[in-house]
Image 1: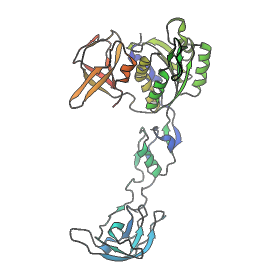
Image 2 (image 1 turned 180 degrees about the vertical axis):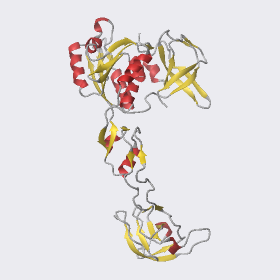
Image 3 (image 1 turned 60 degrees about the vertical axis):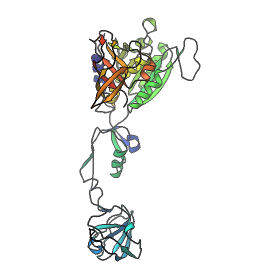
Image 4 (image 1 turned 30 degrees about the horizontal axis):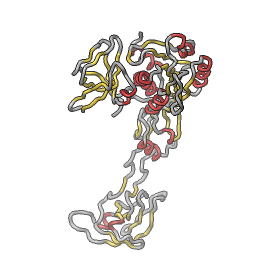
Length: 405
């Protein structure tokens, strides 16, 4: 029997970040940066108006302060739309109508908002004065030339794309999302939505695993259900390895002559099959074929989901370039006792409640010895019971993997 620690170590040893690619901005969303992004120039490259108004010299309209400033009338000598390519020059004793984002004219040191004027086009009446720098965004306010604005390893989101676009970057170098193919195997499997025949069961693994994969930022493709036919499965695996960065196979691991997946995968690459010391989970396979990581997971939906959380998800996070590859964890006090099998690590669907200040409690959902899909659906965590513990007592503190906030 292989320990959870040894199986996970083998998985992480084989998982490597997907090689970086230069992609257009729209394809970079959700990916991990493979480079630092620095400002090639000051942003903005010149002072700009921070609102629609009139560029003036503050000394011409009076400084704002506790004492009221009277109305000052100035001639409007020019318009400066936001599309202006370079700053105009302001002559003392005059004003220039400027749009928000337009270059601040040379000689001006403030912008009076249109709300404090009579909005004149030939002559403008300014009320309340202006302070130097008022409503002006100076050179380099957003970034100075050479500043590192985005760090390698950051996950690209909307605010990161805004920075890249503002710098004129049309592409970013990122670790692209891993491409994962999910193959469900079993003569008994029926696609959800289709009638179930005698002895048939609906395929609950493929959709659940594909959703979990996409939740990590990877892309998922479902294939199957595939019959327990060795020649057909061998052909499908060969076809899918060409387009996959990682392959997940569920089912087909029955003992005896029905162990289709082992017969097909064992001769390929480095794939080995073990009874992993965990519950649920048990028999699983992992290795590489032509350099592609391949997981063989149990067909039982709860076992497949738990094995995914413990082994596949950290591998995918690693391949995607993420620094935080594991689920958040916390310690919580059990609210009631339960028995745990000896010599295996038990993962129990559970509900965690509490806060950092008051502490956390954890309650199993359903019967921990008879894990059901309904229990997993009602859980927000997996309570982890160590291999040497056979009885969890009320009040015992357990490590918990948080599945959702």
